[in-house]
Length: 145
Image (cartoon, rainbow, N blue to C red; front, side):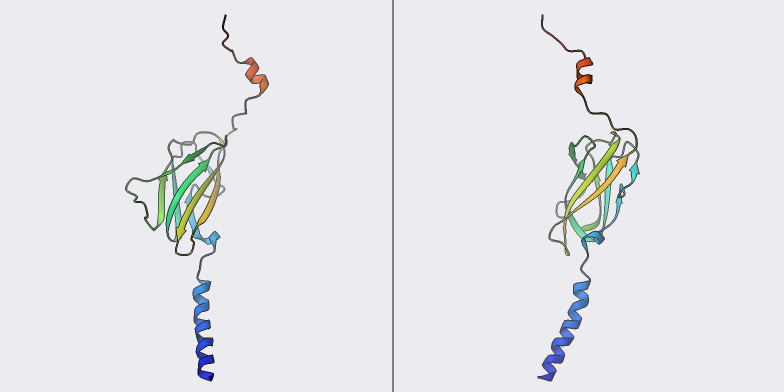
């Protein structure tokens, strides 16, 4: 009986480091371009993500300052189901609009069945003001005679 208790205690002690080795969600992303909370130049047209363990990135989308969204596409040669630690994505068009952006990615890995991460960054400059009734009234309107 004593041998069984010792074996059980030993098995529990050996299992603990393996459980502790599981990544925390905040530790999964090790680097990105654009970096979190960075200011980037207008014309940015790629996104790079580096992870702590091999992952499959299922989607990458970007919310623009005007609240519209665009979806980034994997670089040429990437295959669906690729599990690796570094990814590069192309945006459908270069970013030009000054203001705040929010990048969202969804991945799966050994440690995560599903992990959604976010990276906020900015393009310097003044965001375009929203249209108001006053500016709409001063714009020429076409009328029928």
